[in-house]
Length: 310
Image (cartoon, rainbow, N blue to C red; front, side, top):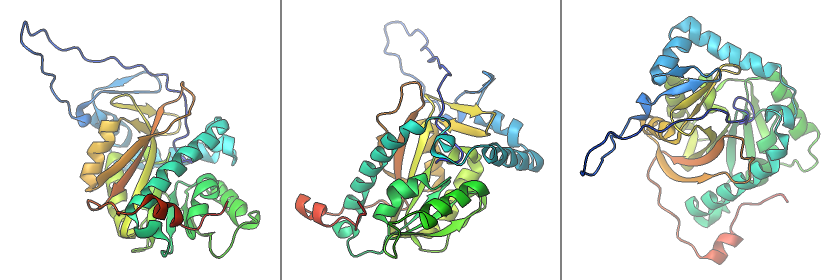
């Protein structure tokens, strides 16, 4: 998401753990739980595992309150612009949107009958920042988009960008609600959303609040609805950014948390076209039940996509 985990250079290098010699026998690597994987912070300090890091930074109510307060305070000092919310990497916006759009098109075609042509599509943009993703992607595919953002001047900018300055805004494709609420405190209306989009923001949540958020957010999905989570990836373990109070998790770390949330990983895709010095970025489509792909011909898929504003 634009608020919370900006893209920033991956300067931390990880070493692999060598296998112990086993003579002529085949070496079998022990499978390490992601919850036992070591990590590091932005100062280079190492932690034995996530629990050690979380205990130090959010181990009691006062620490946890300060963790979230410091995260919001960081972004309150950031300019409400594309370059600001992308951590000085505003030039990656086009590649990011292109990758997201391709992933979204695939999911809509596979998971909704006739691509959802007769469906009133509603999305929630979590950690919406200034409305960058809503404006450039979601509002073109969804009839309504709600924005969730805890930094007030970002949300003010989003409202201005999407309502006051958007000549394409219409009753058929519009930003509807603007919620100035943090993820860890938000509960959606029951059955409102076809898609809940969460990008570059979940790293500000502790593991417990990550799980709690998704368990609450499930009730906001319509039957057949799904989550899209798009996030930076650590090569393994985790990386703590002490400045903005966020954690970059590994792929296996995410998958462990998805399991705790009771979510199914339907599909994932790596983001392409970003500068090599940045963290890798991956998109995950998550469902509450094991979904069945909708069978349709290629021509019908093309003809049945939702109404798109070009």
